[in-house]
Length: 260
Image 1 (cartoon, one colour):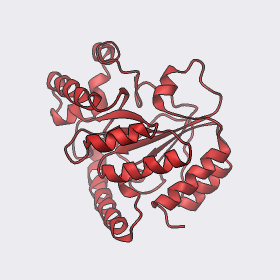
Image 2 (cartoon, rainbow, N blue to C red):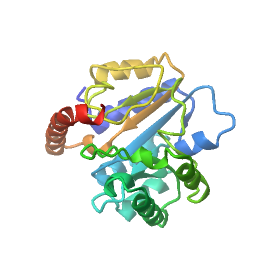
Image 3 (tube, helix red, strand yellow):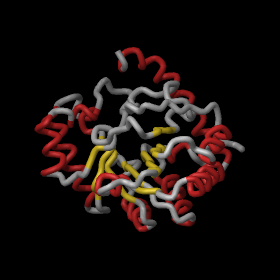
Image 4 (cartoon, rainbow, N blue to C red):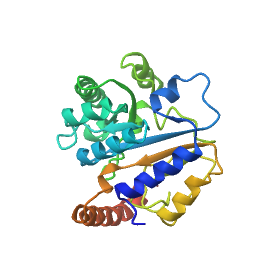
């Protein structure tokens, strides 16, 4: 099986559906009382290629699955017609914010940027949860905007956000699997996309991931997928592979400075 194709993703979804009774969205997670004993959340960070996200959204709808899509508000990603269709498929729309990095660490400017772009996105779809964009070329961690108590209170009370998926979830008993860097190894090509889980679940390839999803040993899982690297046609697949290869090389150079 060639990984990072829609057909591979379909097989992962089939395995998840067979193994887990509850596939929920982040808004459901933050609103549920109580949470189900076992669940999966499928998260998509739409960094680039919103058309790829739409293909995934349609596939998930066809399979009766609802997931969460976090959209940046950069011009190449913020495509209202696509976002509306993704929402119409039954998926949650969230804001993939990068305000603090764009403001070069200035908190006041970052809050203004966040409010403005959240408003733009909310004109297109309902937004209840947010996820930081890793901004690997910036020394600034976007999550730092909400780490102080005052700003975090603003996030909930002024902006009506149920939760930030890195800061407002206790991951200790949740398996966190992601495709960052075009692999399933949590440490290899990953600068900021990390959580404090008690489980480190890594896979050498897609076949190993599929085997795990078919017979999972953990009851709670969050799966992060970046649609930009999942393609149908061979040429976009090779271009995406090449871009990830160059990005990973750059990350390896930046990693010591960011993680010190």
